[in-house]
Image 1: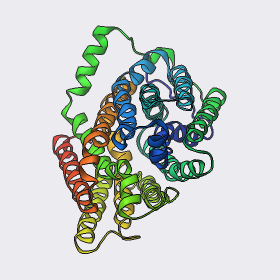
Image 2: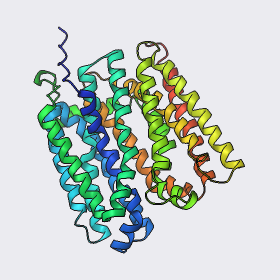
Image 3: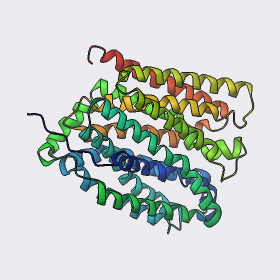
Image 4: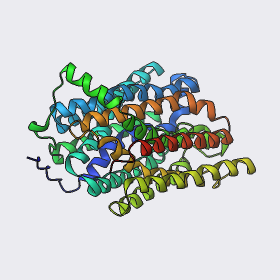
Length: 400
């Protein structure tokens, strides 16, 4: 007998969007404070940049476990504990006196931040199927895009008025607000009869089943590489904006405004197309838009010096196409594993976060020397993502 799906509470899209936005919000809010952190803690720019890597690498490792633990213990309990740990680690950054202290606190944040992103995606599939799941995933993408857009603006103002420690204090208060909302409003969406064991043998078999699935890996590869084409700009934001474009520490909206507007509008269009076009048709349109954006970015950077607004217009178009395809690729990655959605979401987030860590620690520093190298990096990563998505399509072409 099919299991009845739990009833979705009112405002679930906003609540899940807040959960999935908290991790990116914690990344982007303190970007305008890099220079001040370096001066305050007597650290060089590379040491300050490594606070991002210290966050992203544990994020990737722990992302493998959040979903599996929630498959066994339930979604709500794991989310509340993880949010509490994340908030305490953010608050610890306020009292850092050496760059090493900041590395440790950022690593603790990374270990717990992935729970919101991973489990919110599993909750979507707990509640909905088909076009309804596509719409909710699109609405989540649209709403959580607001957070990275306003995060550096808020961080820049707090930096200007109070200094970098106030930035982390603000994120800690935001985490507390999300924790209270989840405690009050979020129901348990995984009933006990649908939970999976945490036995080592079962986990080993299931992880192997998921991570050895070519279809899963190709769908995740498309997601990760598409995002990396944009994420190189996020990780290079202080250099791209302040050095190449001459923007002040309060002007990060020049990058994050167009980028997140593209994310929101692309997700809105993707949701509108749910039920009208297949997932694969929507993905194809997303890649056509990303291809145009990447090509225009290269041409503009070859023929024009870095300037506003031309250096950021292609980023808006790219994130529009990326967001058009993102909900569809996410569903294609999770759908083959209906009984282990949390674990599959963990594996997907682990691969995504590993790619983000590589971008933060290696690719962004290698490419941020000029706007041209960043443009070519975007184009190359988009092509690799398209190849991965095309391989998924070829592999699954006989399945609906």
